[in-house]
Amino acid sequence: MKAGLSQSVRLGQELKINPRLYQAMDMLTMPLLDLQQHLKQELLVNPFLELIEDDSDDETGDADDETEESPTEGEAFEVPLEEAAPAPETDPRSQETDWEEILLDGFDVSGPREDREEREYTEPVSVSHGGLEDDLREQLDLLSLTPRQRVLADEFIGNINDDGYLACDLDEILRGINAEVERSAEATGRDSGPVPYFTPAEADEMLAIIQRLEPPGVGARDLRECLLLQLRELPGDHSLARRVLAEHFEELIAHRWAEIARRVGSTAAEVQHAADQIAKLNPKPGFTRSETPDGYVIPDLVVEKVDGQYLVFLNDTNIPRLRLSRVYQEMARDRKKFTPEHKEFIASKLNAAQWLVQAIEQRRQTMLKVMHFIVDRQRDFFEKGVQFLKPLTLREVADVIGMHESTVSRVTSDKYVQTPRGVLPLKFFFSSGIATAGGEDMSARGIKDKIDKLVKDEDPKDPLTDQAIVEMLEKEGIRIARRTVAKYREQLRVLPARMRKRV
Image (cartoon, rainbow, N blue to C red):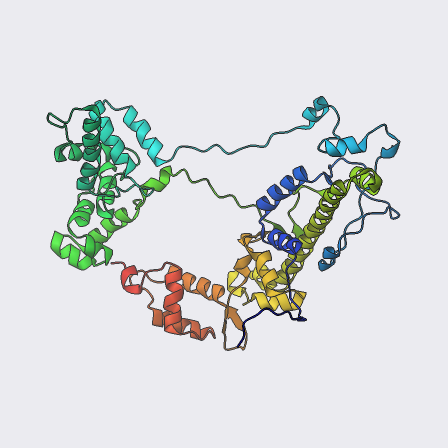
């Protein structure tokens, strides 16, 4: 076959997602705080957007006001663009203002700087506190350590992880710091004589110093040592607990009270009491000094019961309220003043502003639709509690409100709602179901709550086995397999019956 070049014509269709749709989908996914920051940033970079002040007198527009039509891309949204607010009584074109100069000078129409500074405000910024490492170094500063000891102490602290445990053994620490000592001696020409290496005795002494610091248990090499260090700092007599930890740790984990009692010459009840003391200790002491900031949840939606009806509100009072700037819309209409480059810039910014306002409204309407359906479907939950939570899937919501399943997933992702039963993630209302004898489905979350209550109400001396829980649920008309009960029990972090038994 002879090689060569040829041309052909092919007709086809291809589906492409518009960049504006990506923006709308991102805004659906954003939690409240992220959306707030995003809108503030857009307000800074787009001159066609302006903030609606709460005390503004011109928030409502006239029905006859004309606005620039949104681009063809905007037709992807179902909610129409809100009418822009009317301009101030003074016509902007009647003022002696060179709009072209303002456009080229960065859209600065805010007046003298002194006026702008009066309207500036500051936002509280969280201050990062030092973590465990900084806290340990501050405690070492209060001790009378020699320079040599301080160097070794810094090596130890650098090997303590966020849990508070020493992440390597003493031999590894000595190898690392002695390698630094050797390199330092070579660099200063002092390697001809004896090199002052750190010794295992110095490492043991420094480990004891580190393990005396706060929080108790820091610097431990394993869980057993961590708990023993914490027991050492507790007031009172804990000799039995220390012996159980030191000599019978594996039996303690397996809750073999009778075997431990026989070996230590005590009763099973006394051993169990010692185990209760141990259970109150912190297995990860480093987290008490963690620099990880607290996670605050601001609900995106609010559900309130008013006159027997559950009403849904958007908690968007802190969201910047944006609209199209009438001043810049008036300026953009007179396109004869601008070069093609300026016209392209104006068109792109105006389109972006229109799309953003539409996307905000689309987000609001979509969230309200989803939450209204959830409230209607889960009314028994709001009235009676989690055991009456009905099974619900994203597809069911999507079919009812006429949207795609992925859209519902974005709406419910990382979103929270404030309800009469507490602040809950929207994902809380979605779970699989198990058939009951009455023909209705019960959510897995409701069954977990039943299992949790059965365990809490059981006789500690004769705890319920998984099979006993299955039989009790069957009496209530809930058919469930024993392995499913075991899975739910593990998800609830409930121990097996053998390990829950009290003597």
